[in-house]
Amino acid sequence: METMTARSQGENRIGEDHARELWVSLASLLRSYTAAYGLHGSRQATVELGDAMIRVRCGERWLELERKADRLVGQMQDGRRFHLRWSEDGDLWTETGVGLPMDLQAEEWSRELVA
Image (tube, rainbow, N blue to C red; front, side, top):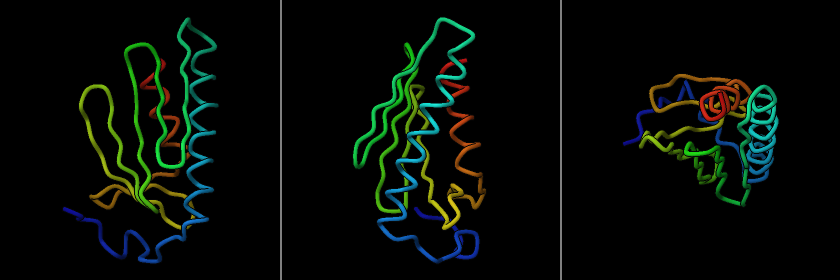
């Protein structure tokens, strides 16, 4: 079911150490952005980080991310599921070959969960 092109993904798969560092960075970004969005309202999110799972919860809304090497599988409370892959520079790429910097993706998820 993988439809990502080798060119859009750089074909240079990142190593486990690199993926782990990006994973921790993603959790940190989610903590920062959800906290920032929560400053102007009554909603606060919790972010749980594990070796292979990040869970973000804010009231009834939630996001779960599972890491499998350089790939992420995500799901949101509304049933949306998605598959992403990291590039060497930390961008997250979709199955359709669309890339987004990790910080912008974390900000988008945070806004959707908290705002």
